[in-house]
Amino acid sequence: MLSLPVHHIGIAVTESECDAIEQRLKRPFKLDSNQGTRVLFEANEQLNCYLEYVVTEGRAKNIQPGYYHTCYSVKRNDLGELASKLASNSIAVPVTKLELSGSSECGFVQFFYSSIFGLFELNIDDIV
Image 1 (cartoon, rainbow, N blue to C red):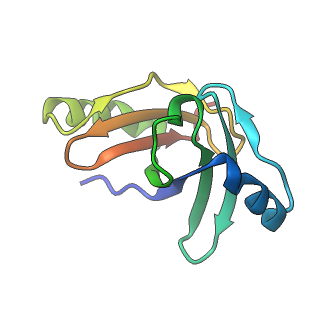
Image 2 (image 1 turned 60 degrees about the vertical axis):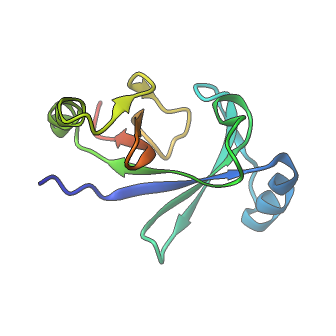
């Protein structure tokens, strides 16, 4: 069984919440042009991962504020096997292509949807 560490937890936020988050973290949201939305990452030591604040616009425009998705770190050598297992067992289907993230905290990413787990993301950060 492949164990995947959590890279980040995506949290959808409204436009009106952005200012308070920016003031607390003392830095601005940045546009992720792939998703067409602004994002801001915060390292969370208790969870040992990032929190990714995603503004409800672009790809995320129909997402309700709150929990959005979990992103798992995957080594590039494990991605093909994992994607095959997800598809062959009808666990999840890809909803985006593998693409370079618009955020420096991530590498190449791909979103999947599962009727069991909901939306999740894989972050392949060892592709050069």
